Image 1 (cartoon, protein in one colour):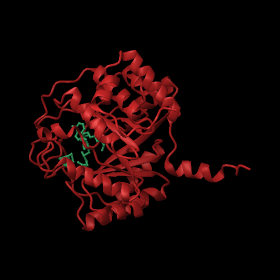
Image 2 (cartoon, helix red, strand yellow):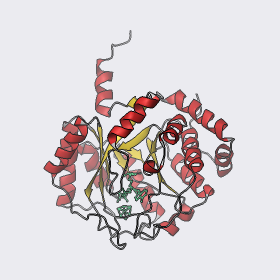
Image 3 (cartoon, protein in one colour):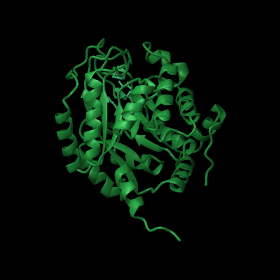
Image 4 (cartoon, protein in one colour):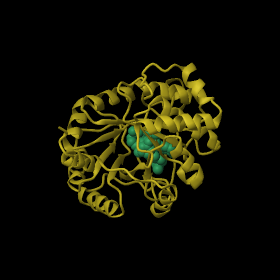
Amino acid sequence: MSEIRYDWTVADAKEIYQMPLLDLVYKAATVHREYHDPSKVQISSLLSIKTGGCKEDCSYCPQAARYHTDVDVHKTMDVEDVLVKAEAAKKSGANRMCLGAAWREVRDNSDFDKVLNMVKGINELDMEVCCTLGMLTQDQANKLADAGVYAYNHNIDTSEDYYGEVISTRTYDDRLNTLKSVRKAKMTICSGGIIGMGESIEDRLKMLITLSDINPHPESVPINTLVPVKGTPLADQGAIPFEDLLRMIATARIMMPKSMVRLSAGRLERSTFEQGFCFMAGANSIFAGDKLLTTPNPEFNQDLKMFDFFGLTAMDSIHERRKKEEVEPVKS
Ligand code: SAM
Ligand code: DTB
Ligand code: SF4
């Protein structure tokens, strides 16, 4: 088994990243198969429960109030409406729901109470719940965990060095502190970032090093490709070559063998074969549904066809895994 390491250096990461492309993919695929069933991909459905009007200045984000984008701003949805959406997602095959809110941080108010009730309701549908709501205090993290949140998504987005080029209204340490609270509350950590914001390859690798310094590694690592949105400062940022995405996925897989690596935003720009290459190189999670938070994503049926084509099937939710473990025969 490949060793789980928490001491990767920039030189190590570069050595991996720069391998001949097919050797890199082969190595990543080998590590992937040591720790995961390569036929299984986790499918999450994403729902924006509060859209736009955010006071942060994340320069990639269409939901920051200060940029003039076309997002349909709406206040926090009602619990019943969210549960209707969750049921619909379940009917179409999703067993995991991720709730996103355009907040800098969670406030202890009636909106937070609503979120706690959404989480309880979605768990009652036997679906796994993930939230991404911005920064948290320890008390808020504990409350989310008690309500049944399985994973908390909080991206570090890029390297510490490049962070100031992208966001000025919070620090890298603010993000890392929330991740500490998430772990302490016993939720699983989902943290990754975005490539294609003008950062260097070294910045991307440094981001992976920060993530792989977390012990144990984040259970889930989303790799987003920037979706350039009109009105944001990064609207005219050019597209990155597919090779960059593939190398990034493979390097993340090798550095964090046990983590789920999510082929996140940006799939609409990638062909079926390019996505297949990413699954080969260790990606084993996607967001499905025709919308991410505010931007388009491939149609669900198109993804199902792609899964059939590659012989992939959906991974069980935590509820399903727990049930199966319960019924497994006791070994003598
Ligand atoms: N407001 C919360 C926060 O910032 O943590 C939660 C929602 S926020 C939209 C979740 C993540 O979406 C961000 O951390 C960022 O990594 C990703 N994201 C936002 N806009 C994006 C874009 N245009 N392209 C790719 N990823 C994006
Ligand atoms: C993550 O890493 N990517 C998702 C999720 N976590 C919440 C969000 C992507 C958002 C892309 C831009 C949008 O749709 O607004
Ligand atoms: Fe707000 Fe999150 Fe968008 Fe930043 S990424 S502007 S915190 S919604």
